[in-house]
Structures are given as C-alpha cells and as structure tokens.
Image 1 (cartoon, rainbow, N blue to C red):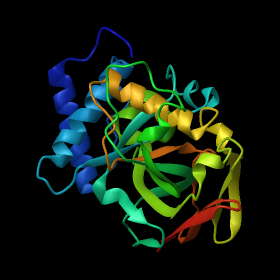
Image 2 (image 1 turned 45 degrees about the horizontal axis):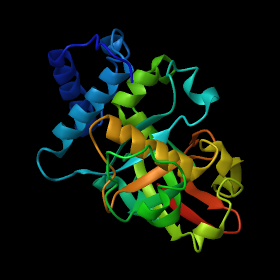
Image 3 (image 1 turned 90 degrees about the horizontal axis):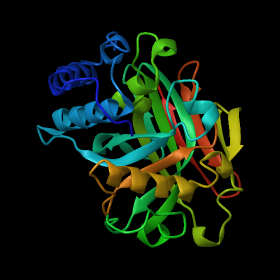
Image 4 (image 1 turned 90 degrees about the vertical axis):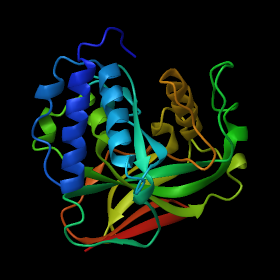
Length: 270
C-alpha cells in the first residue's frame, strides 16, 4: 500500500456515491480515471470499501467473498499497479454452474477460468504472514470455477489499475462448478485451465499463472486483507485468479471454463 493519501475522505465519499449509483442504474462509468487521477492505490481501496458499504446498506446484498486480479507483472505493470489487486464479490453474484444471464443483464461481458476457494474458518490476524502451506487449514473446499467479468467503463483503455480497483476489477459474478476432489494431492500449479465459447477455445493456461500457485494467491489475499483491517471469514468464497487473461465474448452463447481432466463450469448468455 502507498502512504499519504492524495484524495480526501470527502472526495472518496462523493466518488463512492457515484460508483454505487452507476452500479444500481447499470450506467457507464465515464468519470474515471479523471476523478481519481491524484489518488493512490490505498485511496482506491478506501473507495472500493466505501462502495461496498453503500451497496450493502439496505441489507439486500453483501460482500460474500473476494477476487484476486492481475496476478502477473505483465498484467499489473501496464496499468500502473505495484502488484496484484483484489476486489469484493457480492452475494448476488455467486451462482451455480448452469446459470443463465438474460439479455441485457450485462453489457460488455467476458469470462475467466479460476480455482474458487471456500473458506472453512476465520483467518486470524496477528501471526506470521500466511503462505500457501499455512493457509491450507482454513480451506473448506476448492472448486472448478469461472469469473464473469463486465466492462463498465466508457473507455477501458483509459481505466488504470486504481480505477479498476475502485470498481471491483470488472467483477460481475462468481460461478461455482464442481468441487475439486482430493485437491490436497494435486499439483495446482500444473493443472490446465481453459475457457470456451460455443465450443471454441478462447484461451488457456496453467495454475502457475496465478502467482505461481492458486494457494499462493489465496495466502496473498489473506495477508492483504489483514493489512487493510479486514479478514477472510468462514463461508467466504475466493476467486483465486485466472489461468489466462479475461476473454470478452463476441455475443450470446454458452461459455465454459474447464480444468482439463478435473471438471468444468458453464453459463449461458442470452
């Protein structure tokens, strides 16, 4: 995190209201990056958390998990970030494999192939930083999963990393596929994930594309949340990061995220 916020609390509150309003009205974010140009990564996370508070205030939705994004230097450096990023996952966005997105539910949408972790007990703060071994006892289950992403920006080419952090790094939905059986015995860095659209492969990559190992990503998230005054809690679901860059779809159809030889997750876009 960077020290010395360059954006005031009043600025953050006003921006949070604007972002929350665009999410509720499904309108385009056309005021970023300008409104956050003088902010820091720390400001961007404060803004993200402020949006969480506003969109959860009525009790109709809540943050029920997290996602890790931009897990490789080739992904975070071009958008001006110092490292990977994280964002919230809303309860309303957690859906089972086979989910259907009606026409108009999303704008510019895409998919990613990801291992999803479900946390079995609260991850305590105060000890040594977590690593991929020490985080294992907190995992209830791992799943084949898919992240559905949505470009809500007027011009994503101008949306730097701070903007993406503020708007959940394009998060739209976490699709829960089948459990990964006996995951403790698998080399999760070596598993091969891919995404398809109407049977055509779009992209693929190994688990090693996720910070070297999906559980290294999960441990990184646990440490980052603690640094921001938050923790992973029992029941949280975590999109650990994509095995390949996001794949925006050309139109409706059936999208599949598959871990070859392990299982697949699918959704339909009408």
